[in-house]
Structure formats: C-alpha cells, structure tokens
Length: 324
Image (tube, rainbow, N blue to C red):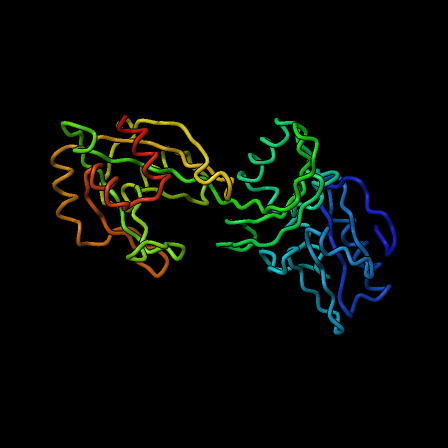
C-alpha cells in the first residue's frame, strides 16, 4: 500500500489507485482486504486515496458517495466484464497475472505493455543497450474493451551509444500488418501488372482523398502473418489463393520515424484467368462493406504506378523488392 508522500516500490506486477468521494478510510480498508484476498500473482501495489498516482496506476477503482464502485483502466476506459463485490472481482479479472515492471517500465500501463508491438519495440531498445527512464500514455485506441489496438507513448530513453536522454518524441504503434503484392509478370518490370486496392482512409492526403495500396491488413485474433495475408487478399479482392503460392519477403517497419509496427511482405504471381476476374471486378467493392471498411480493386502496371504517384513510398519500395 502506498500512502500520500510515500515513495512507490521500485517494481510491481500490477497497480491500482483507490479514488473517489466515497473512498472513506473504512471503505478503503475493506477494499484493500478484498483485493488482497483475490490477488494471486506477484506484487500488487495499491495507491491509497490522496496519493495522486493516477499516472502510475494500471486500474482506477473509484467509489461514489453512495458506495457504488466504478473500475476503469488508467485512461478512464471501462474494464471488461462486471465488477464484483466492491469492485475487487473486476480488478482481479482485468489484471489477470499482471506483468513485472521496474524503474521506468512502471509508467507503461499494463494493456499497452501486453501488446506484441510494444514488446518488440522495447526488446529492440534493450538489445541496443538503451534504458527506458519513463513513459506517459498520451493516447490509446481500442476496438473492444480491454484490448489496445493503437497506442502512443511519450517516452524518455537513455541512448547508451550517445550517452544522452531522448525525451521529445512519441512512439506510436499498432498490430503488425500482412501485405501482399499480387502481380502478373510482363516483358519488363515497368510492364508488369500489379493489383492495388483503393480505400478511403482519413489520413490520406492524395488528390482523390483515397489510399492506393497493396491488399493487406491485420487482425486482433491469434494468427500467423501468412494466414492473415491469405485472408486479407480474399477479403479485399475476392481471390482465394492457396497458401503455398505466397512467397515471403520478410518484415520491416513501414515508417520508422513515426510508428513501431512492421509490415510482413508477401507476393504471389496470379494467372491470366485471375487477372481477368480482377479486371471485371474493378467497379465492385469487396471487403467488409460497412462504415469502417470498403475496398475497390485497381489494376495498373508498375510503370504507371511509379509515374502517376499512385502509392506512398513504402508501397513503392515493397513493389520494387518483389519485382526486382
């Protein structure tokens, strides 16, 4: 338990802030007792009312004047499921087994810490010898309760190779994407036919307000990059291509100065029959025809793509890698 003015422990597996106008000493004592009875994994730190450690807390358990309890994540988002007696069950369910964090790692909220994209970014920093001195979650985007899709952390990192502290940037990330270059080889690279999908994306700054990209995407469900590649091609173009036809080209960051996520690049050469089917489908939307996704098939040669600036630099580089 951490009271106002106490120095927080140097490491923990999970942390909870008790807050709210109804958090009387008696209610707080009872809540701590319930939490202690339900927690079974490592060190749980409880910041008591008045400690003002919302920035350090994975969860906030807020008691209203009438004694009702609301359990939210560090960013005010509700936790999944129903809170049990005085919120203790909801806390235990949401935190699970926690995750050991120490030093600057304590500033990384548990839902962000658990994402594969954060773990790979952090593993790369540690491999380079760098130290995370602190962090602040400035934004998260969730597609379902309890699961972080996009995240942004303002980080302070000691860069060992330069012996300096870098603290003026935000790390942004999302789940990795699987991207597929579908093509029909021509006499030259510029004459090779490439399949693109057109889709409205809010960040697009193209003349038509759309992105022109290779079929691809990601999923929150457990999968492999190859399985995701196959599914995305079928979803966005209507082509069901056998997994054995996909050729892997590895993974890289897409925008290394901005986002930590990777693109797993695959390619597959399509047949004349498949190309004809795609040409016929150019004016029909594929994919999930809802408000959040709508894709249209486009056909162009590599030369046309290169000259017309249809795609961003990352997509052009992926195509150059595949067609080299």
